[in-house]
Image 1 (cartoon, chains in turn blue, red):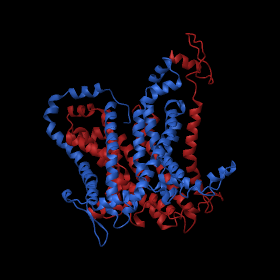
Image 2 (image 1 turned 180 degrees about the horizontal axis):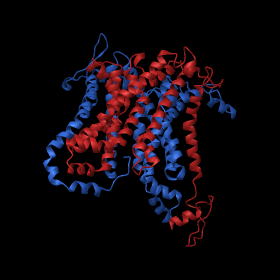
Image 3 (image 1 turned 60 degrees about the horizontal axis):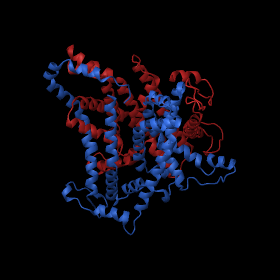
Image 4 (image 1 turned 120 degrees about the horizontal axis):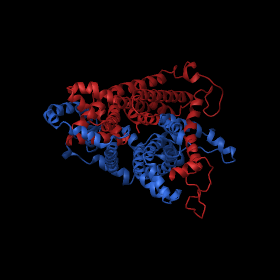
Length: 321
Length: 313
């Protein structure tokens, strides 16, 4: 992943040298490796796999009628649909309010993701291909936001977007209406906030992928008579398909669960996203079971892209070998 | 030929025609000209991404409440003001301490756990090993909110004895971050190959000696880089600690900033807190960079590789 890979021949040659000894020592060695992996495995079972079973047990469980706390049902055969029915009523019933929120979440995330890609790709492409001797300084500037806390980056925009802030001052300077209440529930602000918040992660994935493209392939394209644009479309773009896909996943997955960006940059119900619904239900006695249902459904929708990501990264790391 | 054209025109301004030896009739723009448009775009992006943060840092030193009008330099939001500064307000400095404490606890637990897991899984090949590796990578991509909700239920309903608070935050953050050392160390193991440990075994070293004398020193840059990443990502973490904290004593900086800003009581003191977070992360990054360079000084590694390693690329 990080350092350049060694040729496979070296490691294979090493392995072939001592079949006898490896055969003799196999069993105790195996136990040693198992013992090393065991704490991590137990940790993952107790604090990763069990929690997901717990969410499902609560989603399929009941709600205590008096105190409103959720009661888990651990036997999947006894799971009941109380919480699921409640969730369904919120999505499609007469008092439904989640339906439009889901649509809004998808629209925000789609726009923010496309915008992020349109901004991040050219910048990453430039630094990876053309920065030349100044690559180090460009790389530091590119990486800097990755190291700066998300909350600090949001605070920065809250300062700028206030009614008497620099954005409005700049607009007024150019003779444009400079009295916009940017933080009063504008979708544009939330989408730009999402872009600003998640673009550092995307740009790093894109840079790492584009930097790995062999420049001789691009030179070959040029030598064979392709112009700049055609070389880009026929050589560079197809080669950057994988980084684009993983980069999109790594930004879209957290954006879908985001509930803080819109709270900070708007805080009105007009910009509520799915994450806010889950977060609020978690803080409301009686609705926690429903929050679990939404989390489970959300997870089910995302399982396919998540597994795609895992398989894709596994494949590329095997290629690196 | 490529190199020839390149060196011949590299110094020339854009728009030079590259007439090749074959005598092309129609002049074409030099394909190796510098992409000024792209460079301009990149600079605009960098300005957009960095200048707002610089202004936020600047306003943490503002001698006034405004976050948009400069009223002179002062340290009042850091320590001069006896009530509202980070030093004066007990909740503010409790938040700083909680962040540092969590980062330390989580790094100390996560790194050995993840390194041992990576070594074990990588050498003990088999179905069980690869399925748990899969689970580990899954923990890397799962949306934090869903994982946070799961953790919330685990600590409020299943393991009630733990409850919400620092212990719950630490346990959740360890699970959330264990994939850093696990992934980075496995990548390093792949590049190292097995020849070093086999050589050591040939020379009669026991399994423990191989670990202590050969593997750990060879893996130390990767271990170090993952510690840097874990520490800094705990400083930055918000969702998990937001869901698992329940009072002022276990609220770290990110959650405090969020809660105050949302409650409408934002102000320069929050900028000061944010600046402290920023400085912490940058100190970690700089220490990480030079530490990594020092640890890999015998290898043929360059600056960019070190930068990429401590950023997890």
